Amino acid sequence: MKKPLVHLESASTGYHADTVLRDVDFSVYPEDFIGIIGPNGGGKTTMIKLILGLQPLFSGKLHFPAGRPRMGYLPQASQVDRSFPITVKELVSSGMKTRKAWVPFLSASQKSRLASMLGEAGLSGYAGKPIGELSGGQLQKALLCRALIDEPQLLILDEPNTHVDKQFEQELYQWLQELNKSMAILLVSHDIGTISPIIKSIACVNETLHYHPSNQLSEEVLKVYNCPVDVIAHGPVPHRVLKSHDHE
Image (spheres, helix red, strand yellow):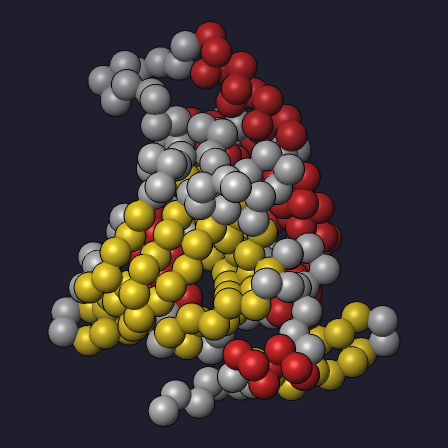
């Protein structure tokens, strides 16, 4: 059996003296594609920051059983300063963790990798443009290229479809399905109805974590895991509206 890339054991974290997540048990395996859902303020972003090492652990354990994996991270669009004076190619190449900070140029292999990533994202013609000139979808593509350029074993995306059009959203989800053949993916989303066709399982985060080893939340699963969700059908695509967990 494969070792998990990440394992949280009774993990708790938060901000200052306030605990946001408590007693979380969670594992991510190399082939996983997990949708992370839950209400605003429930701790979704806090949990992925804990995994990334950007959030302190209050108690419990964070393990990397096979050694710390290479991770790529796509933050929420609101965290990106579009006025920052950086070009698209500079943004993407900044994700090269093997790049020496004091070397002001790219090696031949790095240039090749950069050109390949920009070409795959349809951004070759924008390489020298400031990021402020990109549309919302183009900026998300550039940020995704940055997350992918070092070929991560685990890709973490925090609501990547915010402020983008439906065409980009569709292209993104097709791209992620292809990427999942070679890496694990954690996808934070507020819209389980949209992501359910592409994910493999669901982690519902609201102060603690309820894991569902399927991309569908049946009535039976809801009862077992105490994760109440309303299922509303709109034509062939089910849309689910998340309620709050009932914590004793």
